[in-house]
Image (cartoon, rainbow, N blue to C red; front, side, top):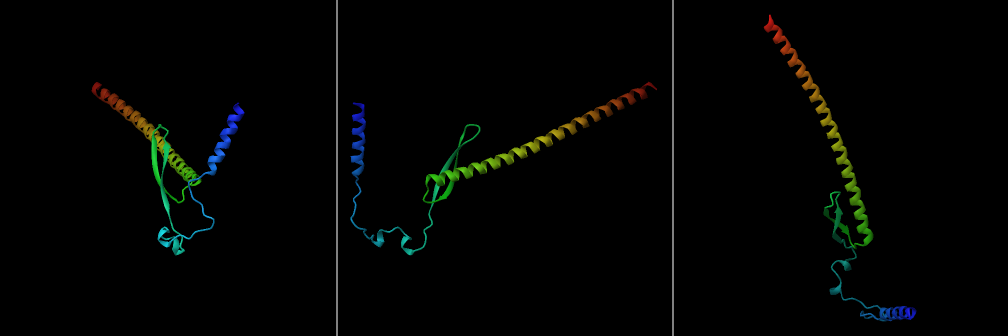
Length: 139
């Protein structure tokens, strides 16, 4: 019973697939010039582009949209290539920011150490002045 049902569905699909709503001609038909899209009859290539939006998920979970222009016709391969290129650029920018952040962290750590050293030195000088002041007062 199950086998017959599968065969019937497949045959029905084949029969329906052969039926189309697009009429066919036995021979090629010429298209009137007024029906040809602008620029195609000049013999020059027509430059066409498509504006697509790529969506990225940030490390924080937000979705960010980035629009870009791609050469038409835009197929899946072109969109995936653009997506890969955008990901590579984003990774490069992220790496650069991480390096800058590390550099700034190192600089802040260095300044903090210098500040701590300076604070200790100032404290020692103040203590030495206090000791000298007490000695002066004792005399």
